[in-house]
Length: 316
Image 1 (cartoon, one colour):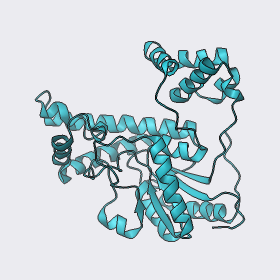
Image 2 (tube, rainbow, N blue to C red; image 1 turned 90 degrees about the vertical axis):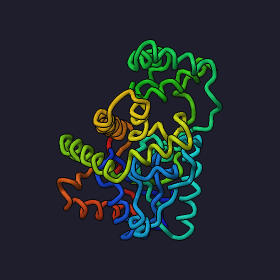
Image 3 (cartoon, rainbow, N blue to C red; image 1 turned 60 degrees about the vertical axis):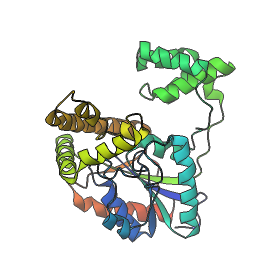
Image 4 (cartoon, helix red, strand yellow; image 1 turned 180 degrees about the vertical axis):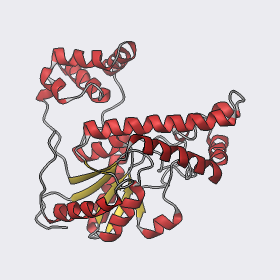
């Protein structure tokens, strides 16, 4: 890594499920002396290997991984906790002269770290609850319009789809009487290069369907049943796609083929939401290694250039 960089460098790899993020992360970790730091909200949980597509033993031996298997499925976890732990792992990697490589599909985790978002606020107060209820009763556009009426500058910087941020802005305005746009901007701690992986939509969906079938053959239902039996239906880990869909099946409310189709459908929908978030919220350099594996070389050039010095930011 170049000494002239004012901020520590952190490489991020994001995108929807089933596009090859793990394979790319391992290759880059080997090539650039990196340590992989998990940024998937459910790979932190022990005993949830198949459904979260956790790196295999062989993959973990191929490159060092951190923040995997660090909590029980019934433990609470949040973006704030992730950021705190990720910063610790980044510091350790940098102290060893290694490149921190954050990889995962939980876009908000990556973005919170990238932007240095303030996540340590106390639990939702009455104003936040009021705006959350407003969102439920109306929609994201109506909520955003409420912000636009009170603080047009803040509204211009926050897309309607980012309802968490819109609610936070409205909460600040109605609680303090001050404009959200007048707040001092958070200063990012890291120089982040974001690589986004994607592929053509029909190909992505077919890969997701195939992956779910493979997970079933690997024992996904048995894995999910074991988590349910030990921790109960309310465990935070069971909110993951590939686990929650089995609960009605175990309760006799639906058959297994329906359950499998629900997992596939929910996985496809989640992939779409992941892409929407990454495209709207993160300035990523996008690559399609499924259709164009030769783009590996373009990624190499980009990472080399970034490690050597500043690169031009992505517009928007």
